[in-house]
Image (cartoon, rainbow, N blue to C red; front, side, top):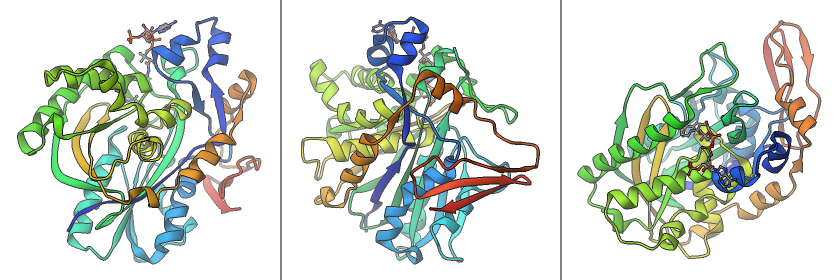
Length: 388
Ligand code: CAA
């Protein structure tokens, strides 16, 4: 029996800020962003959107297809949680009408935790094949204004149904891991924006790739040449290009720059215009690969490199299932991305600075998002989510 991703869907805000506008304000060459970090736009969450509303919007098509009773467990990965105690997935559980016997838990380890959730989901399904596991990763990436990280913000959620005999990607059991206690990117509980040692974080990312790959090579029967495409964690698109060049060099493979590029380029299309979505980013990259790649990927093996600052990394592989193209949500995703609205610099600042009420009063939030789910109010410290 194979286990893996049966269906995948993502969601992002309907607002974006173009990095050309940021470059104009900063009097910088826009190519620093468009070429240098490989990013064009970044998604900005509306006042009535957060990790819960994006997660429910991402997962809704999967529940409509599989039925709410099919899900035995909901694993919610995030590093921008909205509560120190209650799992964000419990709100999603209600919004999606999941059964009372479905367990829900939240997982955290920076951008890596969606991969931990995926692996745990595969193990649960292997034990109880008749129960599916819904894995959701959802984040709003925020850095301080006027810092190098500002251009690498974004927001998004991805939902994956993990099942026996999956229709999209079967996940191989072998994994390579690497963990090291470092301070490259972190967010103390009292801060709403992340702190980062930018250049150091890129170095640790590449070191972790090397170490996780070495561990994967020890346990997997596959070698570099068996993998035809690669999905990397995507803090910004250029990071994946650098990582892949690093992996090719490490393996002493002779390839043209075009061949190297071809192995990752289709994974980057969505990320370039959504920005960093932390836990969700690699899996939105997988969506991008499956939905935009011109070649038929049936039976091809994909390498995955998941990285979470702090740091935990994992390299694993999966095989694309023949017929996968019939089970994608490509048109819906394209329509969502095509219908987003561009923000002026002032509108971007207004969203960035939108107050997060902490006084325990009654705060209704303006109805802005066109999404199916929204955060309608925060009343006496309680978040009130509604279906529109
Ligand atoms: N045309 C073309 N390219 C240009 C250019 C121009 N006009 N101007 C600059 N560039 C290039 C630079 O040469 C550089 O390329 P290389 O990296 O190949 O040398 C690139 O654009 C970036 O320029 P800088 O190095 O000057 O950029 P910066 O110092 O302002 O910021 C950054 C870069 C450190 C990555 C910053 O964006 C940052 O701190 N980001 C947040 C941290 C991050 O994403 N880290 C990634 C690893 S950690 C992780 O993965 C977890 C996570 O999700 C955060």
